[in-house]
Image 1 (cartoon, rainbow, N blue to C red):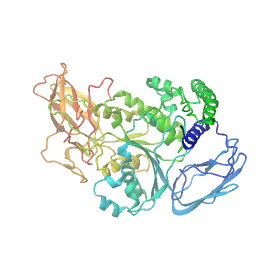
Image 2 (image 1 turned 30 degrees about the vertical axis):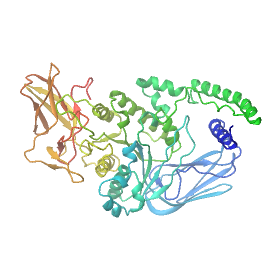
Image 3 (image 1 turned 90 degrees about the vertical axis):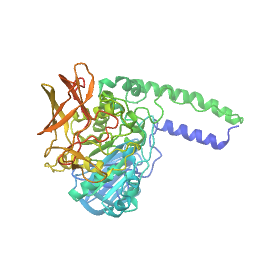
Image 4 (image 1 turned 180 degrees about the horizontal axis):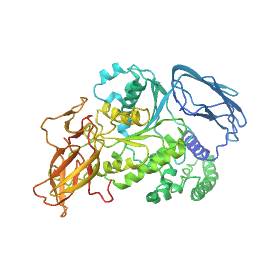
Length: 534
């Protein structure tokens, strides 16, 4: 026999589901703010700042901050939004006041740089789990660095709010911050002397597809099948509206039957579920709906991203999914092609030293991440030297954050002289029985390098390059001799008289891969024989 508690839970769950679509805010009389706004938040400097919330339909709402007052009137659904004019940096704590029939006040608000930190567990990993914890805690005294961790939730359609709270950095608080995000923010704050806000919006073990909005899938023709699935449930498509109309009809049919059963103390049938809707956090758009959509359009400078492990084994399809994610987020934020910097997957597990062809594990995902540099205003932090064979969560996030910050400092903050990346494959040329490989981001020159822990990479005098392979027209791969020649690398093998292609570190864990530039940044893995080139 069903008890009243279970009955109430079913009714509440059903009301919430239906309310996503039928939620005219007629009963809302008080100004309410989404939780992305809070005490100790950071607002984005130098651009218009949206502030939004809900109130009684027709209610006048005034937002006051830093000498500005902006007024809006709640629409028929109780929604309102204002945009504060662009503001300069401010490290002085101030109040943001939202007033209608009631007043909501946010204290200790700063103005600086705001970055969204997305991805899976390597972005979610906390400072608590990183190298050198006690020293990092002692150094975490910049209270102008703030972070809000968005609690994990997913949904069939975009949700209205998130769960989270802004926290100012301190030796105790920093332990729960996203480590990659914090070390990125620390570099920005140190170089620019500005507040930095981090929106830690990530979930361990998740794929890229659930973070992507419908608009992103529509923008990439190669993902038409995913788009068809998603459009079957979004209310902006005819198919989606038909699906939900059928769901509402099934709910209406269920209610009398459930009420009748309940009235005679019989177990009612469970409420109907949306048939065919993507279900579970691994399905397309689910995490976007639950964790990103409620944050849009909070003003941000850009996004950093660490994800891909859950899409292990994919190649060009992962590149297409990155295009969809980035295009979708940019479209919805409406800030143009905002910066999107990401981490190429670190080395992990073991690779066969007797297989010079490579291609195992993360190799093709890293290749797709390399391809994603063709997307405007993106940058990639190579992490091939930071991984741990026995741990998918390498503890050196300090270098991850620094390498991401190089892109932002150079591209977005005027530090044009910085070398932002290690060597990235550009082209090759066959020269007799050798292949000459050229690179972008050579910086001060190529070196054989070595990286140990948190120490900067250093040049190995007389060192020999590792993990280069070469093949002839027979497509049989051999480990190769590779020698730095000026700003290029010459690759050869006595067994390959007429070489046609080269591969470098093209494996799950090319442990000891050691091509760097003099700035101490590692070369990305690559292969010259990829169809269509890089």
